[in-house]
View 1: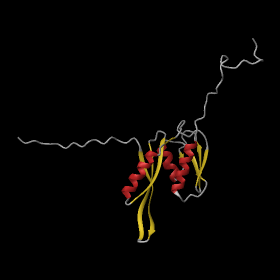
View 2 (view 1 turned 30 degrees about the horizontal axis):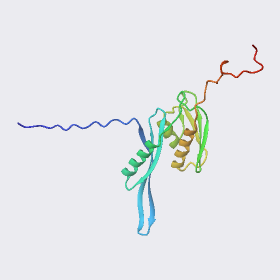
View 3 (view 1 turned 30 degrees about the vertical axis):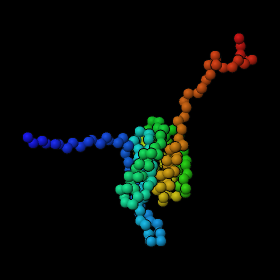
View 4 (view 1 turned 135 degrees about the horizontal axis):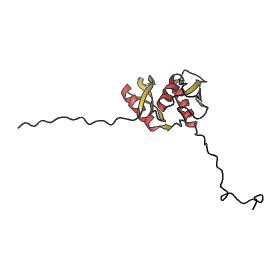
Length: 177
């Protein structure tokens, strides 16, 4: 009797996060023996529901750098407050020479952002936003870090004003009995 074994692939659970390669560069440093080449990868990871992360890593080959950067971006996730598909208020942030301005927009306006800011906002789940890179525009890594800092600065405004109950309010001499 012949036994047949079927190989069943273990289904890998689908990751809830989507990753995007922002920048890939060949970097080198010089030692006594010559130049040592490595690769640097910058990855943005997000779930399009308010969580986004950014990671940069170097490796001996492209695949190692991308894997490290992806792992770092998932480790450095931040929560972005999103109200009606936009951010709650205007915010400016600076990292290095890069300065980023993010403004909320009304529904239907879309993503008015370029390059790095567009990728990060898309993966964060922000659908209506206007942005402007105010500082130097050449460095993707500084622009990405400034955008992440701007998203970290966002706060959800409180709509309820705390009005104390009469029973909790301290007795004052002006209160009528």
